[in-house]
Length: 212
Image 1 (cartoon, rainbow, N blue to C red):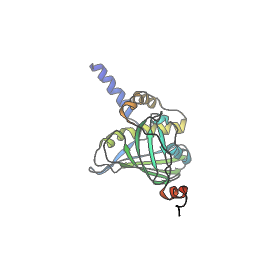
Image 2: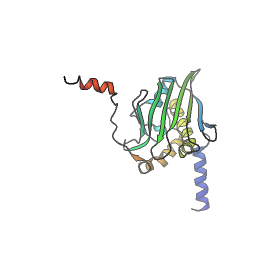
Image 3: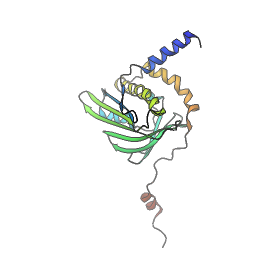
Image 4: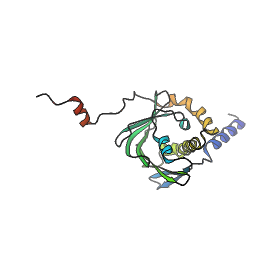
């Protein structure tokens, strides 16, 4: 790579990963760091909530990925590529209080880190919604921590723009064009989504009473 090309690449990386309007700060301790992102969106809380939990719809602000989820405490969730063929991340819903709070375990499909914990809180304020995202329970500065220290500001800033203006910002379109084609090679093949699982009691009721 020539010096000029290297300079252009560095400039592009700086322009994509700096200046996010939904910034995240490092918190916690050296051994157990956290990412804390707080910002306001000029949109009603119910619309912001939908942006986080709507299923089976490609998210333009997050590489056109799709959320598949059982929206209840204890339910499964996962992010897959737009064609549903590749798994990006998955976990279990710990707490669900619409339209106020969502907490879940989080594991990136292509990383070997132990599951972390992601919490989203929404508060109605004058003129819109205050959003607080906390990503923690990391075992140090893991690969997941390093990845989402940059990814969260990008995705959250793009989501804020879409909710407020209906448009995806230019740099979000750029990073989608750069990274989306490679996701099918860098991620894990997704198993078919079976939908909502039956709880043991519900399964027993569906089978009917045992034979006498």
